[in-house]
Length: 420
Image (cartoon, rainbow, N blue to C red; front, top):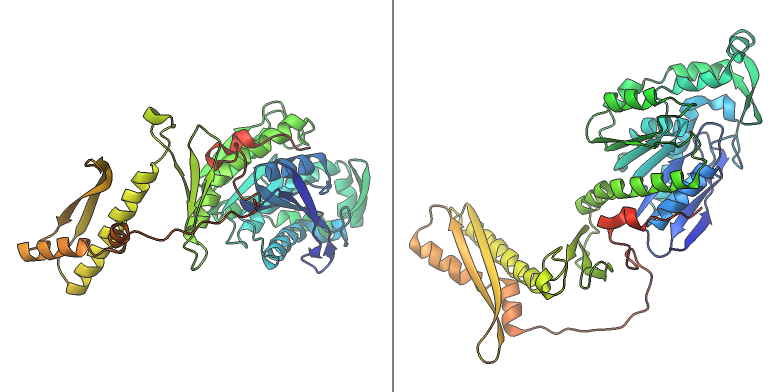
C-alpha cells in the first residue's frame, strides 16, 4: 500500500508552533493514531518513521510530531519538563480532532510512552494505548544525566549531551519529573494497554515493563521484543512492532466505532477481502464482520452466506415488529425467538423462507394468533413478498478502507509490511 505524508503544524500546550506530519494510507484510513517520540529524539527518528509508516501500511493514519524545542518545533525543550510533553500530546490530539481526524489510538516510544499514558486521562475518545520501551516512572530519564545531576541541583542548570546533542537541563525539569505518579496514572487509565519491551533493552530495563504491567488493570497485554535495542535500530523490529499494534488495536478500535456510528447512515458497505474465493467484509452501523459461502461450495465458511443474511434480516425485523406491537398492547411477551430457513421449492425453484416463531410469556391463544398475523406485516416480510426496485451504478474506485486482498482487519497483522 502506498504511503502519503501530509505536513501538520499546530499550537502546542504553551502556544508554540509545533511541527508534525501525518503518514496516510492510500484511500480512507481505518483509524487515526498519535505517536509520541522518545526523549531527545524527534519525529524523524528511525523508530518513529518506520513504525508510523508501517502502521499506515495497515490502514492506520498516524500523526508524529516534534515536542516543543525538538526538531522543527518552536519552544524550549528543557524548560517545560515532562508535564509540557503531556500537554503537547493533548494539544496534538485536539488539533487532530479540529481537522476531523480524531485519534483513537495513542502510541509512545520510551519517555513518549510514559507521557502518552499520562495524556490518555485527558483524552476520553482514545480507545487504546501502546507503549514501546517506556520507563515506568518519568524520573527514570535522570539516569541519562549521570554526574551532572549534582551540578543541576547546585547550580540550577547544566549542559547535558544526549545522543550527540546538547541540552540545557534546569532544576525545574527534575522537579517536574518527580511529580509524576505512575501508579495513579495506570490505575486510572481504564483503557486497553499494550506494553512492548525488549528484555535486553540497556537504556530502559525490562523491569520497567514489569512494573507497568503489574500496576495496570485489564485488559492489558505484554509483548517481548526479543533481541531489539531501545531505538529499534533494526527495521525488522520496527515492522514487527507496527504489525502487533495494528492487529491488537483493531479489536478495540472496531468496538469504539460500533458504539458511535454515523448518525442517520443506514448504508452497508461490502468489500472483497481476497481471502478465499468468496469472503467479503461487511460494514454496517460501525460494525464489521465477514460473510462467506460454505466450504461445500468453495467458500471458507467464515461467516453467514448472503441468503443467511437475508434470512437474518427477516428474523430480526419479525422479532422487532412483534416487540413493538406487544409493548403497545401491553401484552406479557417476554421474548420472541425467530428461526428462518431458506430453500428452493417447486418446479419453478422459487425462493421460500420458512419462519418458525417461539413466543415466550403468559400469552393466551388469541394473543398468539394475533402476533402471528403481525409477523406477516413486518417491513422486511412485505419487501420480500412484493419485491423491490434495485438501482445499480458503477462508480470510480476510491481505494476505500478495505482495498486489496490483504486488507481484512481480522488478518491485519499479515498485511503490515516494512514501509521504511
